[in-house]
Image 1: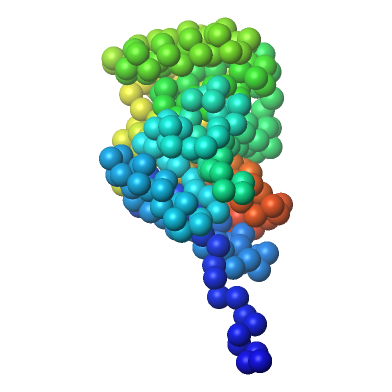
Image 2 (image 1 turned 90 degrees about the vertical axis):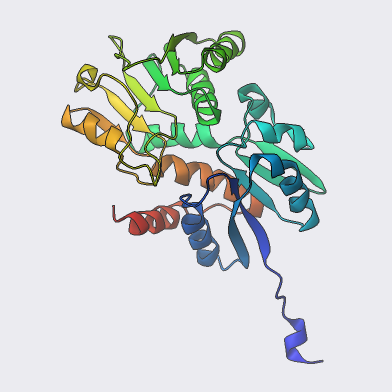
Length: 289
């Protein structure tokens, strides 16, 4: 038998669906992880328009892909196209990771767990008993607020431009978790309440290429004892975080959340523990941090 016929040339496929998706750096850390473990896997960055999401999910099945990440604007809409959704993702009403189990596509959410791990390990912050303000009420805000609630935060304020989405998230938190939650409208520059311990930008404001943008808050209400977090990984040092640093606040960028949530997805797809240090190093090199 020809020696070459014994080789396997088929790569296992995973990736991300989003719109826009050009700026998503997940490929950098996941492919670094595949190389480190000598896996013949590929991570594809795929632009999927909202009207095409159902067909894109069918494509996962047709191509026998091992899974997919979901980013803006697909995290909520995707639920209707999956075979099963884990309990925590059902609670959040948002999915950011899909994995294959036999012939079933299972949706889960690793965003909040990734954020919480970064808050604990990178910022050295235990959120128990803290008061939190979250900007936004989309998929990332849902995941983060639920995980923080279950981790024992005392109070969460959801600040959002759409009252309907903001109040829906607050009602979810009140009904499904023990946290004290309430909604504040975001119609102008938002003043941070006092006291507050943790501020999280869970919107896409400041995401590449709109790097000069920052959330519309009253920055003079940021105090030195505040922990200011941004979920945006590209660029990691956003204008939002720069403004917070000027006022002496402790900051946490979105790279840690990206790595830790990605490590969970890596394990779900491959069955192997992710090389977290290698993933972090790859992203740090990419962004020069």
